[in-house]
Image (cartoon, rainbow, N blue to C red; front, side, top):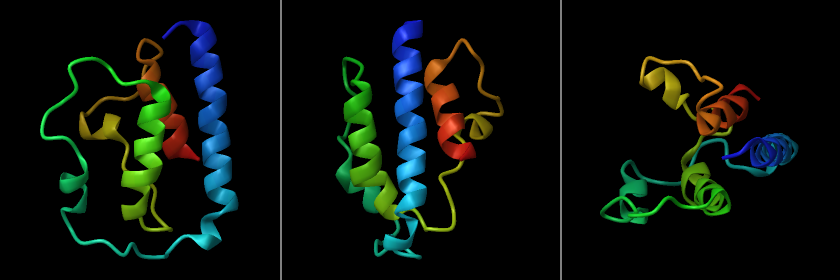
Length: 101
């Protein structure tokens, strides 16, 4: 991801978070899904080629966010790895912006 795309995607992430917060009242307080629901929505193996940012964000909205409680954002994947986002990893930096709201 070059710096121009990083800027564009970062702005899109800010817009996504703002839209989420603007529509939070329309979302369910608790998800209407069962534990493990996501496993059946994902392919059985990782893609051979990286997916585009737009495809990833569509999956986040259509597959992940339906399982998120309204009062809790997704956990920071960097924390799960015991790391903090760094400038050298653009995706983690965008995720940190998303998570930090």
